[in-house]
Image (cartoon, rainbow, N blue to C red; front, top):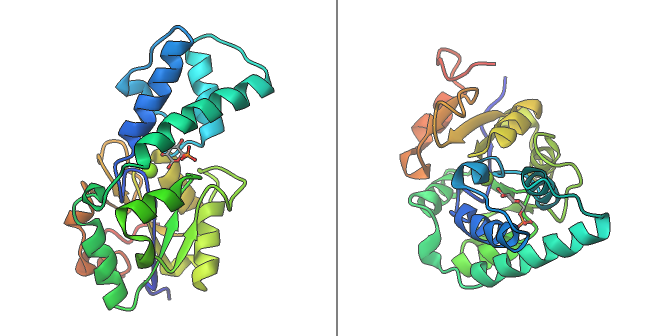
Length: 226
Ligand code: BG6
Ligand code: MG
């Protein structure tokens, strides 16, 4: 039987709200290329890697670019994004995130970051929460984007726990799919309409508790669905 020993957290949208910075930077790029993207479009970029996000945006704008041009465009977007996240402060940690991480640590539950971002280091440092993670797996360590479970499986491995002992916290559909594909329980952070296949959906980590965490594994709980 599995027991909950570790929690693996996505970063953007779960711990911090960087989607708004990604949106501003992608919008600026689209505008420079002569078209616009909406907040609805931005929803489709959540959890999606930088390269794939650019491909989708170019597709929406009906624009084709060579690989070298794509690299330059992604680099330009990242410079604007980094400029914004370099000014992030501890106030930008989402409500309840720091507290829930501390609850886990005090309860002997291991914690890991499982993010597609290659900028997670700067975000964790600027918001002052890097020390709350036993392992950090981000876009610099993985080659297969979510919904591939690689990022979460590596997290479990670094924490030295089998996947069935891990719970993933995710705000993106592709992330929820990745966790399920990895054989882990998953808590969706956001709307139940979008993340319905998660074992539990909450609006934010401020709604999370150790009781809810352990309930995910209780044999009689409806949350313990396969
Ligand atoms: C994910 C975000 O966490 O990281 C995506 O949800 C983003 O929107 C991806 O594209 C990659 O991030 P970065 O910082 O490496 O460009
Ligand atoms: Mg996310």
